[in-house]
Picture 1: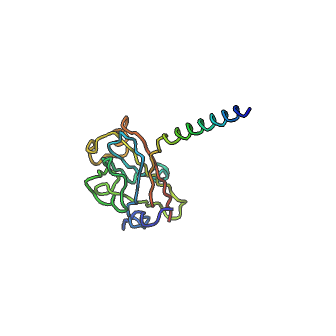
Picture 2: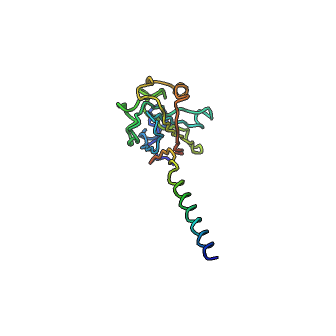
Picture 3: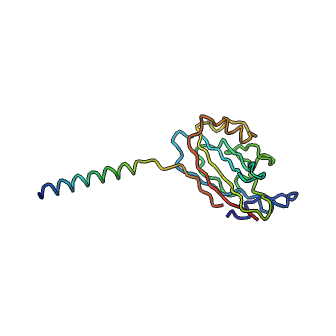
Length: 148
Length: 36
């Protein structure tokens, strides 16, 4: 189970009972042709099964192989954020309704051959996936479960 | 007979060594981990 600190924090939403700390991530053994990485976090059970997009990030240079805990709570030179409903698109933690079975939060890191500055900020998940078509080299996912 | 056994053992050792080298050269998969 994901720790509560990684869950969303929003005074106006009683389901957001965490601290919204962006989790630490590490990745390794990217293909040699990798020029940048993209990260997507979704909750397939969100919105009653229609899915929720929690995090869209990209243009992360190939030289970077990790994100420290909390690093994706702020903008920075080595990361560009997409559209996830948060100001600046920074990490948006889980806020599932209370009392449900745990939701699954799928964090996928995609190695791409796109240069780090190739994509504009603010892309939706769908727009990012469309832009990555033909440029995705490999991917790996981490799944966290969370309920409260 | 002794020569045949030695030859078979030698060939077996060569095969094992070759298989080991093939396993070593297999690329490691792209992997993401998280402490969350």
